Length: 365
Ligand SMILES: *Cc1c(COP(=O)(O)O)cnc(C)c1O
Image (tube, rainbow, N blue to C red; front, side):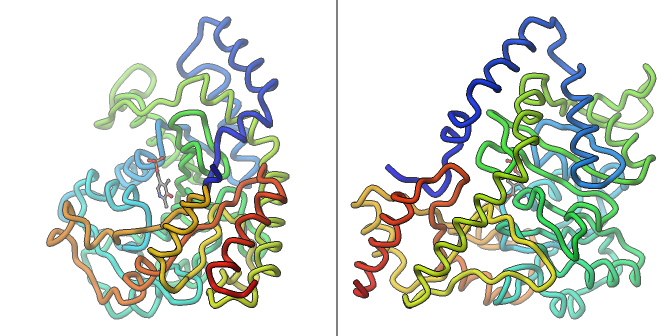
């Protein structure tokens, strides 16, 4: 079976280093908030080019904790997209704020600035820009807009570890940025993990304390919770962080191979935004006859992904609870997109199999 993502292959490719690290943590008698978390925070800040990192339990928590640190909650609204992982909106909901969802553009599938402008209201305290599939939202324009309105810009970098805009890493444009390290992500743990990045010292301090019951120097100064990252996951992430640049490069190589091999098929290939890099967390194409294609590929042992099958504004739990704009592009993407297999360890013959099957399906052999 060939899957659209394969975290097991990533483990296998770094097995000796990871096993050695896990074993060393097991023998240290410090399993929570020890040196592995401390060093991971330092090394990730350096990698992104920001001052502080706060390691937390998962990517959803990262967003919720950032919102809390900015004192955004009941009575406030937070604007983002419907075309994202449920996590982005779930985090806004658990902060107490009301999610306001707008559509994406039809070229890069990131938040549509024109929609924001026509939908803006005074209750909106922050915009969460999602760098979907691995490339930048229109982040400079968003930064300018937020500054003008006096609201916070938060980046959801969960699919874009190491990606950049005008040579500056994503995660350095907003007041704070959130990364999920779910196993399939470009920087993935072998379990749950999340990272908050900020260059604002007081926000970093608040996030560190919210992560652990609001504790600061033995006293609880802010209502907090438990969202600690454990030492084993931090140790694994440190091993993988050292190879992230190389692994992202391998993903880009796969994307280029798909681009050239699939160019004559009746499918819409991904576009890379000008002045930005794309780290291809996902290689998403728009296709015709999607369900037939999914079934055909599955019969031939290739499992394609769908990101996302149901846009958030149509999810049963969220329907009628969100403020939404027109969602025609988001709904179109949800009906036509498939994610082809892409990960650093994928083999050429596996890519050739996917390509050959697509050619057969579209009768272009
Ligand atoms: C994966 C992801 C998250 C967070 O996911 P967790 O499962 O909580 O780590 C948030 N936003 C986006 C866009 C994601 O892809």
